[in-house]
Image (tube, rainbow, N blue to C red):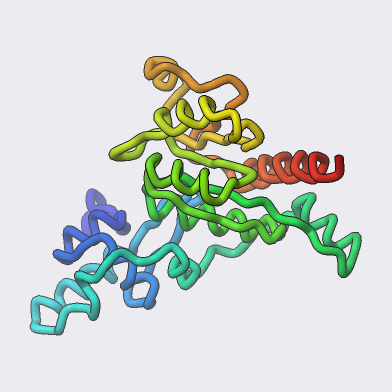
Length: 236
């Protein structure tokens, strides 16, 4: 392999190389048939050599992977993908649980609006590392998020801005226009810069924005803050 050829592929690149859908490649990773890992920025990378071996086997007449063209993997199936080792961190929620054995620590109801499966997986790992029993609900775009906002009434909305067909700007404009949703905390995680966001009309007042990739330690701190505010509100 030459120095000009990367030894890793994205999920989309692996799908094109194998002639499969992205969801099929995700299933191959979940079953351990392709070696993959998650970068600190939350992106999946797949071993190119493993992809080439599978491509060669298919050219030699090996059957296509089962369910190659089945529907996309449901969100709960992401838990089958091995997570990277968690760093030695303890959140406030975990510390509270450790300090009061037997006491229930109420986790957050978190709605994540994100259309990138790798980012969804990374966020699941982050919530697991927070050790507070959070409940995660995932929406693939703004229209799904609005339905889930009404149905689930989450404590925290975490949203990307660039999604199709309805983006995060549409979601936030709709959310702030509804008085009954005023208590929902909002966190924006986006690859857009501050200038790019301003050029699209900016964000509503009170919405926190952090540029991807967000370090796990930083995200745990943000979750700590949201959790602590929710605990104080519940104690009133």
